[in-house]
Length: 187
Image (cartoon, rainbow, N blue to C red; front, side):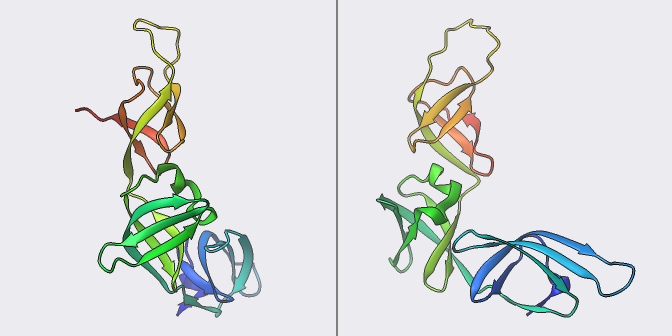
């Protein structure tokens, strides 16, 4: 059980039966009266944002979430299918719950799937993934027009800016936290 004083950014609590992630938190103590705890929380199932103010003494249930490492199998329509490598149990997640993670999903990628009960509600990716560039502009050696990056499309359909020396077919490393180019994979 959490008290309102335990609230902080990143804490997961249960409100009205749904898991919420605290995304902003502010404490104010007016001259008179009780301290106020202003929070902004995101519903981890449907993504809605909730602004609430609490007073001292209120309590919250911790969100009963489970994270399991699973392997991404395939996408069918708007459903992403994952499999637990230990039990071979499969779970399906809606595209809306994937967020930006869908930009980096390749078959056989191992991810941490967040479960609320039996429902998959989120994915934690590794910090870096390697994806192949399938389309980008060609670069003329010696071109010094001042462009230090160019757009490139990787095999998942994600478009990002890459250095001008990157060519189609090359494998690059992308930081999944920022969605930016990190380095070229050699070999």
